[in-house]
Image (tube, rainbow, N blue to C red; front, top):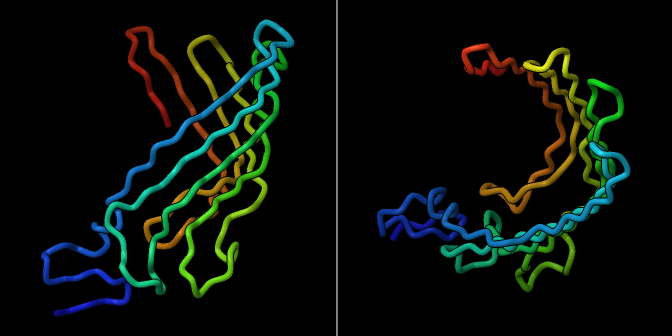
Length: 168
């Protein structure tokens, strides 16, 4: 019987990291908008994801993935600010509650923090767009409980006359 630190039994032929990916993530999202102009709105968004690991470790030790409830509540503005410019300014708070083993006090490894996305889309012509944004969020991780995702995105997109779309 060969055992590794995350409690996976290698004699059954399973890869431990693949087994840790055996999870279900049901959830829901609620969003409401208040239109302030024809193409602009204030919004409030709430989402809940419940991550349930169908194959997990039997022992409480390092490397164990925990079932969790990921709550995100955000509010902000999404809409047209100039003739060819669309702005997304959404921010809020994220809370990830992870089930614990009895040796850890509640809240030690929970995520609690600010999340946001600030982006702008420019339409230089009707067939092209340029999008840029910065964001901070958190996601469930297979190699730990969660990871904080801080970054930026940029996209160029053009639709040709023959309906082919190029994206970079």
